[in-house]
Length: 363
Image (cartoon, rainbow, N blue to C red; front, side, top):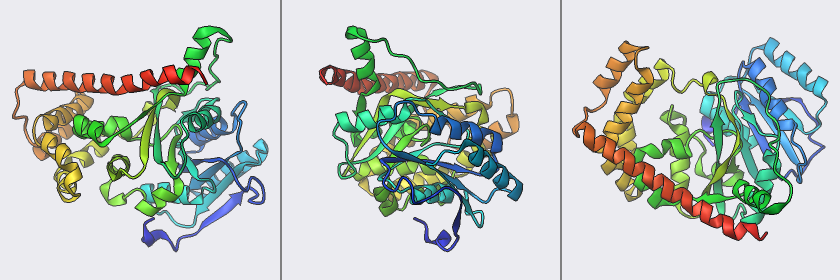
């Protein structure tokens, strides 16, 4: 990954590496000073029902305070789960550097990313192992499976979702659960910069090809707060391995605990607007479609989305966005029409996944 942090050690504080030597997948949880939320994330990761494969849970602590680390260690001792491994960095290496470190610490071929404020459904491992088997997905042909999630403001328990037993309804529900869509470069071009919601936020078990991600350099910290989007976009445009997204939700994305829409984060989006355009310009011809759209109507949509998130609650940051981003050259009607076109493109894209259900029903 990024060489500047290679010399900073990650010390194993809990777990026996002699156990679970060859897990099928690794649920990786990067964290820092989030004790209460982290506990809930860990519980959702270890309480997987009917898991058909061996898996590990890797916690990459980015140098939390000493008292927090001790509480986490004691919590894990009380749980007694032998497939959990808790590492602590000797220094704070930064958010995205720690994401990279969590992937490096994984011992399986698949690293399933789970943010420390989010939750997995109790059938996650079963679902993903079935998806991999049914679609003949391997590390040699696939780089990334973006999982969908359910946005939720609450902190209630996560349970395994019931499926009706027997009959065509149960078969359709199972097929829908295991259906995926291959995301192609043309899909990214059609959505332009608005593909961020489709491919970003690697959490709730988004599955990353560990070795391939390392070979690509992982998440680039210099692109914060958009490193996750650029990482996923680059995997699609690399075009040497497939990228998928699930049709079904695999976990709960607790938006109320998220920092993405805080005013200070939104300011960063605006401050780095020109830098984002330069990134697309300098990243070869494969981004040409995105750049053209970004500098036309798509810019207006992205700008308006940021402003809508701040409506009535932070006028100072709203003014900052207006100053840093380009004004809308298209009138309101054209913007609305383009947004509707995007929604239609998304529906057509997901239709490919629904059509795949027919094939899955017989399996």
